[in-house]
Length: 225
Image (cartoon, helix red, strand yellow):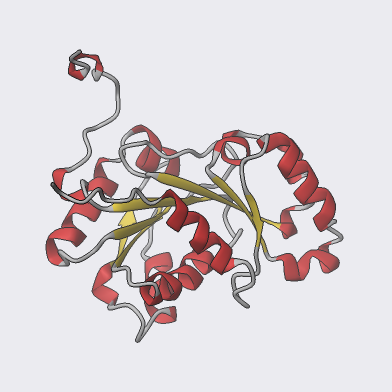
C-alpha cells in the first residue's frame, strides 16, 4: 500500500539533514522559563552523551540566543546556538511555516555533523502555541507558577496537547499565592494522563526528570542488519 500520495498537506518536508536528529520543541508564555529550562537541560544531555544544538526564536532580537550562549559558556560552543529572528507572530515560525527554523537547524547540522539532538525554543506568547510535526518530534510546554494556579484550567492546545507540560518556578509559588497542588491536579485533569513535571530550572529541581522524559521519547535505532 503506497501512502506517499496522501502527503499533500501544508507541512513542509523535513529537511534531509534533520532526518536522524531528535528534535525537541520548547514553547510557553513569555517569561515562563523556556530559556532557563533549555539552559538547565543542555548540560544534562551532554553529560548523557548527546551532541546538542539550540535554535531560539525571537521576534526582533538575538536576546535569547545571546543569553543561552552566556549561560552555557564552557558547556556548549556558542556556534551551536543560533537565534532566528522571525519578525512576525511566533506561531507562524514554528507551526504554520517553519521554513526558517528548519533551515537554521539544517545549517547547524551541516556545520556540526555530530549533533543528535536539536532544541527549538519558540518565542510563543500564549496557550495556543503548537509545533509543526516537521519541526519537533516531541513538544514540551512550559508554564510557571507566577501565571497563577488558574492557568492549567484555561486549557489551550499547549497545556492539553503538548507531550510534556512543565510547571516551572515552583520556588516562587508561595510568593505569588499559587497553590502547586491545585496547579498539578488541574494540569493532570485537563491533560488526561499526559505527563506533568514540576521544576525549578534555576536550581535544577525536576530537570533530570524532564531529560528522562525526553530520553524516553527518543527513537531507538534498530541495529542495521
